[in-house]
Length: 439
Image (cartoon, rainbow, N blue to C red; front, side, top):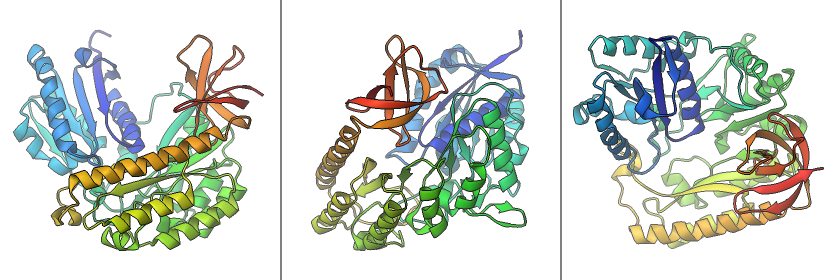
């Protein structure tokens, strides 16, 4: 079509932003946009931003500066900022970068079509409300196109925990869970379009309490119902809080075959003193006892975690307690960061640890985590795993996918097809992946 418009979306941050970008593309698809992977070809550019990483806002402004030549070359190009930085900065973005046409927060992207029309008519649009209406109810139904074998599905948004370092309650709002029937409908639609594995998303996904059949469902109950969807072979969820890991969800890891043996369960610190300062509301011991119960339910469970070092007030002893916890748990994967203040959070006003000290601690922690990751990955050699193949690999005839433990696995075999789940014997452990042959 001669009047077809092109949309370029650059996504930062978490899996939920990936999901949100897909839904924004669908919302603007109803206004005649199709996706392009080249910003130079776009009629509209959206930056879907994340506020978690250090200097997140400044990185967005730098990216906007790099887009200025495209705007000068094409004055009709529309540029928007979405996501958590948009929520936090609001109209300040337009003040600092006049080339921006619209700013939309993560709770209002269902209003994008109306905002797009307004900017096409010459206005500038900002919407960072926390509306009462459910944005998912107002989004257009996705087109009936094929999908890859894996997909994200948001079931819960926001957070009520108010950790001292975290901006999520301020940018995503308080905890809200989607109704069960809407999740099941979306899941069935994804499966009908080729999806075999769904990852349930939420800022506090295991705090899920969506309405269904007249009462509030837990995440475990939702998982068990999703497991009954014919054609859905694998279920995962992220990100969890230790305080919301209830008995039924622990049990589900042992008795629901479609729930994969991988769990991301952030602890942040091994020091009770620092955990209290972070307002985490759990202790190192309660976390360790929780891990023990999970491993009783599912002995082969691979654990992932999050860690912050250099939090205000962290001493050498506090850090060593974190290292001790890591040694006791044994993580197959983990994310670790040097603390950086987020404006507006309680910890932002506290005196920080000297940067060189925090950086040294981060390097020591990352070395231990990498050692654990490699040990667990190397232990997979000689074992059989089940791999869901997602896409072609880097070499001719190679396909790559994920094992049930979320390890990246590649196999070179003409029999392997995208979307296939196959038994694979691991023959080699590489830096960030495993190699195998069909078993």
